[in-house]
Amino acid sequence: MAIGPNVVRWSNETGFVLATAAAAVGLGNLWRFPYVAGENGGAAFVIAYLLAVVVVGIPLMVLEISAGRAERGSPVRTFRSIYKPASVLGWGIVLLTVIIMSYYLVITGWTLGFAVEAVQGNLISFEGFTDGYITLLYFAIVALITGVVVARGVSAIEVLSKFMMPILITIVIILTVNSLTMEGRGEALQFLFNPDFSLWRSPTLWLLAFGQAFYSLAVGQGYLITYGSFLPRTVNLPRASGMVALIETGIAILAGLMMFPIVFSFQELDPGEGTELAFTTLPLAFEQMGAWGGLLGAVFFVLFFVAAISSCIAGMEVVKNAVKEEFQVSSVVATLISFIPIIPLGILSALSFTPLEVEVLGRPFLDVLDLFAANQIVVTSGILGGAVISWCISREDLINGFGTRWYKLAWWTVTAARYLPIPALLLVALSFIF
Image (cartoon, rainbow, N blue to C red; front, top):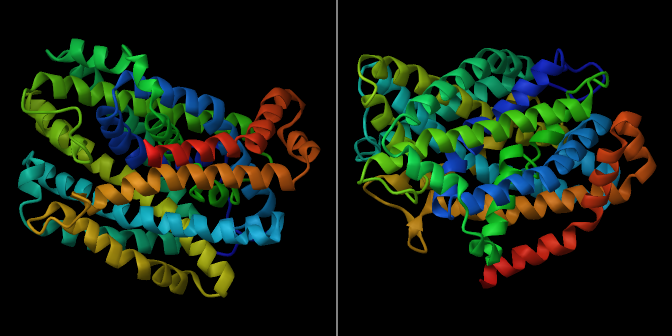
């Protein structure tokens, strides 16, 4: 699918909003937000995350989508058009997306495995699922499905998202309401909304909060630039971006409300469970729901898989478009090339939670990739990308692109993007020290 005047675009604003939200909701919010909040103080992290979303995340999000819509290309082409040496940053973002995709495909394989078992009436435990090497098979299946959809282009992504997102949100709300009837709801609400502000003295907590905000909104990962390149100029950019941010952040909070009452209702569970948190808590919740639990569990895990694979598709779209544009190859060839570095990294991540237990520095290989890529690197790429866009395109042109109604948002967006790099990069440096 060529990036140019005749390329297929999002059919309307709704298609863009749902597809862009689906790109991050499946794993960035349903899977990642609860486990990072659980490992980092609950409420203190949640409030820091919300501040990061509002003050920095949304402005950078709008800026990246705007740049993608203006330049109509991949991150590499977009940054080269804005400032030629910045094409290196574009390739850095593509490399970051390759790393993230390598373990995203593995986790999406988990969702597929749980969906298959749930449809058969088995609400299995995470330990039972990973006691062999079936995760490698599901990784391969997900990689194949993702490759096929990416080769078909943006229209397939839009149809998938319009069908899946409303149903998924409804199921999440139902599960949240059910969780809030459990014995552990009081402790869960205390954990999520009664902060210990002394934790804010930690640079690492703030880095994790900003990393999760960028991760949730897909900032600094090329998704927004790529999806923005498909966006018609008639779409109201600030409004569409606000809707995406509202959906993604809302589902992140709902995910916390859905999972932590379960955690605090079972003594054997721990809020700091880590990357497998969603896969240890949710089967227990469905078991507690009686006759309807099995059916709801099957529907949820099927939709969780669809949401997760939407994240994979979005990421692979970033890599594929960059390869296709730069090497002038077909969509199929570009897709195949894109998977070359992803497959070996994905195999190592898949083996992290098997009897082989591939580890780095005492942690599962998958966890290490996620903590490093989704914090230091995502924050750095998001901040640098925003700085390049805001300094290399005139302030007047950027502000005018928002429309007069959104002047204050435009002014803050440009100002934040221009002057944020120094304190943000200092925060990244401090996180290594402390």
